[in-house]
Image (cartoon, rainbow, N blue to C red; front, side):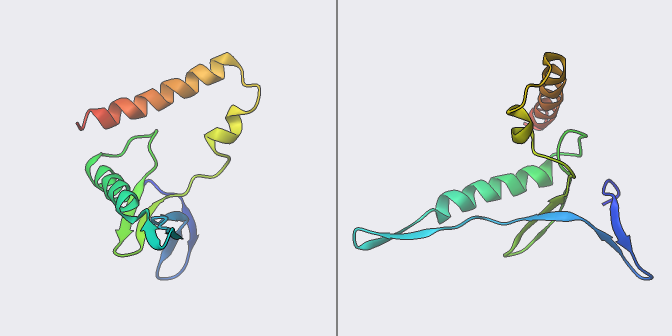
Amino acid sequence: ISDLAPHASGSSSTLFRTVLKTPALTQMYMHGSFSSNAPDVLRQFTAELRFFQTVRRHKNIVTFVGSLEGVGMLLEYLEGETLWSYLGRGIRSSVRADWWNQILAGVCHIHSFG
């Protein structure tokens, strides 16, 4: 939690702004039977949780705060727009190159953990 910026403080606690990420489970009724994405979503969610519990902190990877059993995982809240929203704009090539270098630094860090 030391990497997170406090949102508010009181006499006995400090509040931090975080994101609660939960699995997006869906169930559909098609052709007389139910179908669910639960096995795939839970496998992916478990893999991501294992990733956050294994990989040490890096400046280009969002901070893992913890998990709430049966609910989801808490991640650092980052102020601003998403990378996707920036990509639609006319961005200078030097800025794009810097972003790619930051992304690749994060990916290299992840791969160093196998």
